[in-house]
Amino acid sequence: MGADRGSAVLERADDTVHPRPRVDPRRGRRRVVALLAMTLLVPGSAQLVAGSRALGRLALRVLLGVVGAVLLLGLLGLVSRSAVLWLGTRGWFLLLAQVLLFALALGWAALFVDAWRLGRPDRLPQRDRRGVVLALVAFLLVPGLVGWVGLTVGNARGAMASVFGSGEAADAAAGRYNILLLGGDSGAGRTGLRPDSIQLASVDAQTGRAVLFGFSRETEHITFRPGSVMAGLMPQGWTCGDECLLNGLYTWAVDHADEFPAGTQDPGVVATREAVESLSGLDIAYYVMVDLKGFSGVVDAVGGLDITVQRRTPIGGGSWPVVGYVEPGRQHLDGYHALWYARSREGSTNYERMARQRCVVTALVQQLDPRTVLLNMGDLMTATKGLVRTDVPQDALAELAELAVHTKQEKITSVNFVPPLIDPWDYDPAVVRSTVASAIERSEDLPTAEEIAERRQAEAEAAAEAEADGAAAPVAEPTPSSTPSPSLPAVMERPGTDPDADTGDLASVCSAG
Image 1 (cartoon, rainbow, N blue to C red):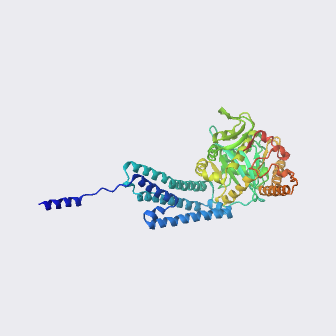
Image 2: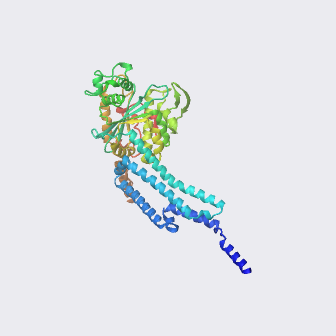
Image 3: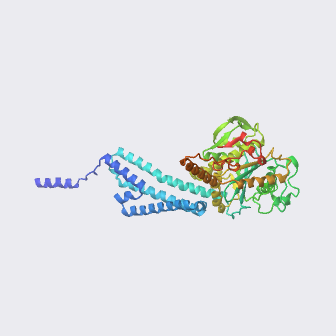
């Protein structure tokens, strides 16, 4: 009987379910966090140590492939920056990059979850489990960031496809790309979109040195080149006095779109383009039209603009109440204030307004570098969506982007065709064209930023050698073409130093930077 009871006790003991062994909470937490950290630094290493080695080896191969691809792109950028820019403006490459980034984000997130599982958080006390769950969430932010980059690349690809067409790239005319820049305003109280800012950027296709020509929207007596579309529609020109202003030509063309050749996508741009070609004597390769109501978003996306303001400028005026001022001095303007600084008419002339617009454009050129564009791509795409029109094809983006990098390093010469240079209502077109040609010729004669840097280095070395020999270092006299120095960030030329390009004292209005 006793033996039977003993047997029963043993059987019950054998049937007892032992609880899962507990681990030291501190060691358990450290194990989980260590495996997560290993996955952060070397994806797959946690699996090699504590999990599926096959999965770990696969992750390491993917990691090596990613590192190799990044190094290859970096090396390619050092050898040929234009090749990287070419890839970055190809829709198929951006799509491939987007898919790979999404795949990497999902795979990395799965490795983090698996590493967390291998840490056996189920053996920790309840209060410690919450801590390691929060640790997992924190580590998952890293693959989340990779996914966000993939989303940004996708947005950039979509915006690029919607803004830039698929036509053929235009050839440089006489070694220059001439690009028409139109600032349209379709804000409240306005009927349709009209170009209030009309500028022509002429960029050297080799050096990137640019000359910016500004044309008053009040320019009258416009004739057109023989054989042009507008010459056929207006054989006598746009010459009806105060009713026929340069910016009004856009509205006229839109209202008479049925008179333009079939297939004309934007009659207003065609009319304005041919007018500026006739005024300047230059062949325009491309145009870019920006609706100013999206300009503030662009400025905010790049972090604002640095502008030295010389005159107090009202915020408001006309049909808007004056609610404040952009004060004199060096200012860092956000999008709202930069837009009002560029468009404000209260208490100033249209010519001063044109000068302020030139300051804003130059400041934007200075700050819109590839790094800024990359870091703010999402905001830039949102700000410009539906607000930018251009005929620049995707095939031309890489070359123009490479050219823009050079332009940032050079001095931007600027000429405004306003009093006292010309009276927009009474001028000689030949004077305008000769001024354009002279400004371009002088710009081409200036030494490049690279040449300036090489000359300064040679002067510094010569001075160091002379000092070592105990002699006074010779001081090189600056030449007129090197003042101001093109090696500095792009700035506008002071009109007072150039009688042929005089537009009034621009520096008394503002300056970029």
